[in-house]
Amino acid sequence: MAKIDEKELKRYHDLSWLMQAVDIEEVMSKLGTKIHGKSGDRVVGFCPDHEQFVGHLPSDPRWLLSTVTGETFCLTEGRGSNLLWTICRVL
Image (cartoon, rainbow, N blue to C red; front, side):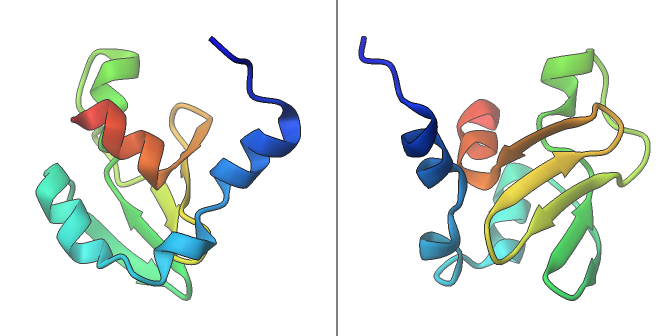
């Protein structure tokens, strides 16, 4: 399997080219993730793949999603990702 270099990895991490066509509410609903609130270009909700990493469902809405870049960050786990990788893990 070919290794992805750092430059290529960063290109795939920033999903700004895709996010303008994404309906965040619909995606979160299909993932079974509740949106707790919005502030500017950030959505706050319950981490959709939290259980896979820590073994239980999240108790607080501490998952952030940038509606511009698609970057995600779970404040409880201290782990970042992006919307595409999160969707892949949940599915």
